[in-house]
Each structure stands twice: as C-alpha cells, then as structure tokens.
Length: 79
Image 1 (tube, rainbow, N blue to C red):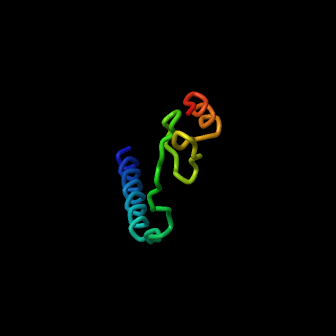
Image 2 (cartoon, rainbow, N blue to C red):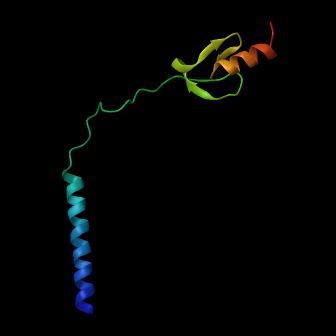
Image 3 (cartoon, rainbow, N blue to C red):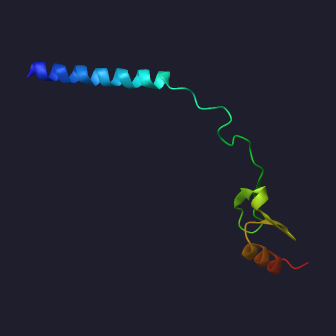
C-alpha cells in the first residue's frame, strides 16, 4: 500500500512540475491584443445607469440610457 501511495504522489508531483514548466515556456500575449484604452462613462439622468459616452442619448436634461428614459425625464421636467 505504501508503494502505491508513493507512486501516486510522485506522479502528481511530476504532473505539477510539467504544468508549471509549460506555463513558463508559453509566450506572453501580445501587448496590443486587448482594448486597454479607458472609455468615458456617463450616467443616465433618469436612472443613474453608467454607460459609454458613445451609447448615450442626448436630451434636454442630460444624457439618457434609452429613449424611454429620455421621454420620461422630459415629461416630468417640462421647461
């Protein structure tokens, strides 16, 4: 029984060492592969949801996450 447990432990150690060597040899990902540039985020004037500036809808009272919130805000705050 001792021999079997020793053999299993040695196999597990070999497997862990092999995996760590493979990770060290793997090339690092290219520097420009992801979208690392920060985006300007704006809050919806109706619900406060933060969304990218290029997706926000402009309105009378600020920017909105959708046409329904823009209409509801402009109806509740007539000028």
